[in-house]
Image (tube, rainbow, N blue to C red; front, side, top):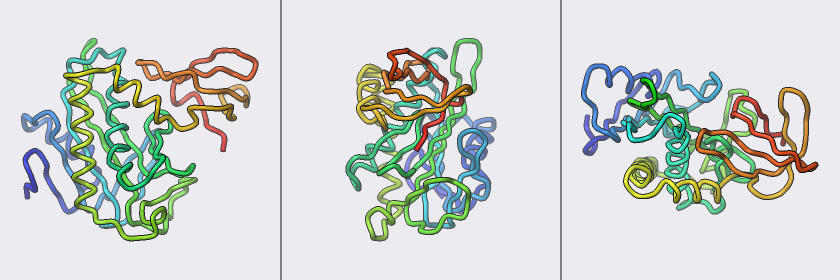
Length: 246
């Protein structure tokens, strides 16, 4: 059932990312094609984690892109654009929505949403990308071992209508993608940094060797988090190499 141009609704999927990747093998999907599943049985998050979503209470969707204009060494710009699209939509409901590096969406130190991007790369070209987003909307009890989940309903104290929020998220993601593709990568970078979680002040981090205090300097186009320690040492980490200490 097609709900609108370039958006498909399905009742159930194991993973909307898996479903979209399979369709991409079988069909010539348009840039920005989206799939939303009311129920996702095996959603995936970063670092191989699962994504918990109660049936019909949250948003699980994936969007297909052809970012062949973007060099592989600047692929993180796509992650920034997509995270901004989600925060643009959620900011209509809550103030001070932030992006925890690399692309988790936070409110008051709790996780509202997560994004998983899977790129198909040939040489130095990103041939296609499938971006999955999970947003906690009306769920109130979380059974998984996720340390700090939060839903919009918990934050606002009221039920949220799924369809209007879903449309806002899809539209805003597409708008941010078009901004990256046709207008200005610099604006994407500036807005991403302005919304970064812990963007100001010293905080505790853990790498493979030690815990230390640092402030965020920037996130580079290749996706590395650049920190300045309290002893003025500059360090850069990929997202799997650094842990935010509460």
